[in-house]
Image 1 (cartoon, rainbow, N blue to C red):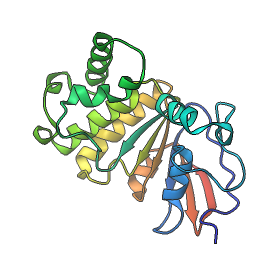
Image 2: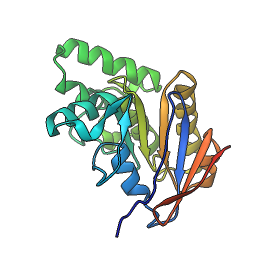
Image 3: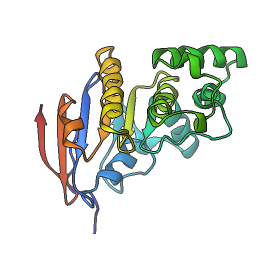
Length: 207
């Protein structure tokens, strides 16, 4: 039985979109396809006119690293690396010097207001600070879009609002952002909300 059925979804450059739905609605599967972590068994998925189905495994890994910035609910930071080193991680797959990687990572930490925490380890950071590091890491490759999987789910209300302010700021600067969420308050802060139920899109509305 297919998890997703008759999905026809277009996200334009510069949009801030929330994808909502109850448990079992297909949100995670759709997120994995959007993030190029899984492949659809039928149909086509394109990012900037590139058909994902046409890419080899190696090409897909490179494409994912360059085009998509991931932000996860539980941050997914490496505990033995500093904030700066965590932000640098996506750049280690590129042929750029260590000094340039350092410069770019520090620039991103400055953007999210964590210049003074560059040499701190994840265990020394609050939940909101960890998520800011994760956002900086997502931005460091200048991706085509940012994909957030419940990015405020592990945060309190005030910190969630601060993280959403960051997302909105980067969106206003031209970044395309897609957030998977179960929180109506978070979805309401986006420009558009797509609702899933039983593997199908049942509503797609402008907020």
